[in-house]
Image (cartoon, rainbow, N blue to C red; front, side, top):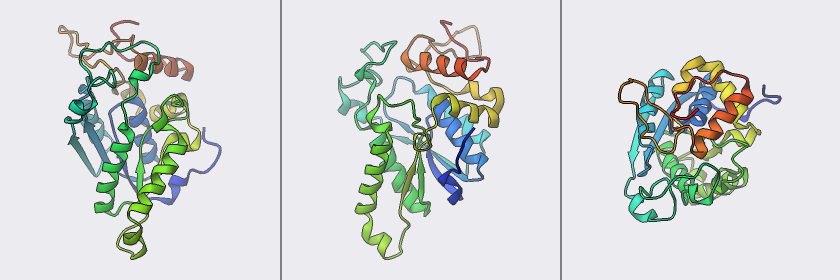
Length: 244
């Protein structure tokens, strides 16, 4: 599936940003398969789909992470205002890509906070699940990763030079040109059907009261992207959707 050796082979542990979504679960599974110890970090940033944090808890246990932190930065919701539909409870979430889905500086904030933890753990690698198909999102592109990595290195240059800490490195599946379909196949190889228990829906509140299972809406942009990737992979989609 992967034609070239991954740079991840140079590491033994990583701090991985972990939403509980199919991309982050597959990414963490990939790290685990490569033999890395996982320190998972999730964020409550005021998102509508806060259910994903409960999903993240379950997968952190399944993946036997060394530690899993859930960081409450929900105050960001008050700063975001009407800038995006994922934190604005009054905004309707579109079924196709619209820039309103982009949460300003979200990955910048997540990676920076994850880097603080990585420094305290003396772990030189930070990972997040941006894949090669995330080209519409500026903070998912490899150019963003390289720029932020350079900025973090400059900000801690003296400590690195003095040997007090290691240089931080950021990796995402996009860096190895892995798209969503290739990534979920990696996740499926590690987790099997359990992968479909991951959470992608932006709404996060479609629950059938008569069932113990939680349902994706099936119509938001994220649900549609999930369905397309699973169909392309050739796997049978066992996600529960309100709308098929």
